Length: 233
Image (tube, rainbow, N blue to C red; front, side, top):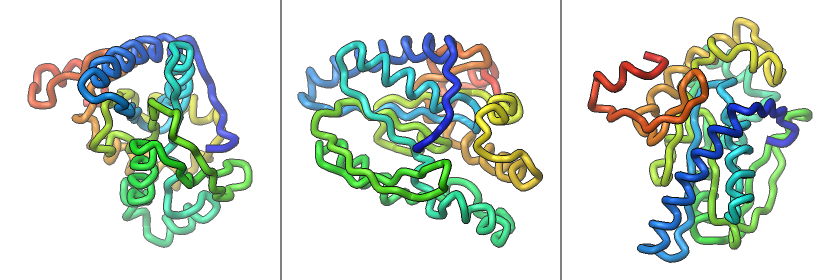
């Protein structure tokens, strides 16, 4: 999103370095079997968990390693613009806050453009003005797409899924510092609803990031004992 505020810390850079190693290793294996394969990393987590910071740090680590990354922020795909979203949610009594607020068809179309190496017309929200802009992206030379957002793990064909295992209650200070939205009673209702939908995608994670921002292999979703070792239960 245009004008977004990033609070990049050493923990983001360290986690990104480990994830970059995994991505580069996977790419080498995949391209041996499927030459020209374009790789997708999906990064999900609740508000304030550091998705944008981790995505930026990962993209920079990949670029230093010689890959050509591009970040796609799924927050640009809301059907309703930021300036009108609160009124729409209040009118709907917050019933449909969550996954259904995204234009998934447009997101899938843009991802298909990436896979095919085509030009793509991408939505981009200007945070300052709240205006929806359209940007043309040339995916011909991009070989890694880093997709971040609340429901990024909803992208079924992602090659690597990363889940930041922190709840919005644990990261409220980060949200306040970034100043993107006020934490009034309406915002708290939204965060609670988002929490449910974000958590529903957790089982798709290949890697998880814990409270100390350490990277782990995700536990088997069918293994209840392994699940207990992670936050958010």
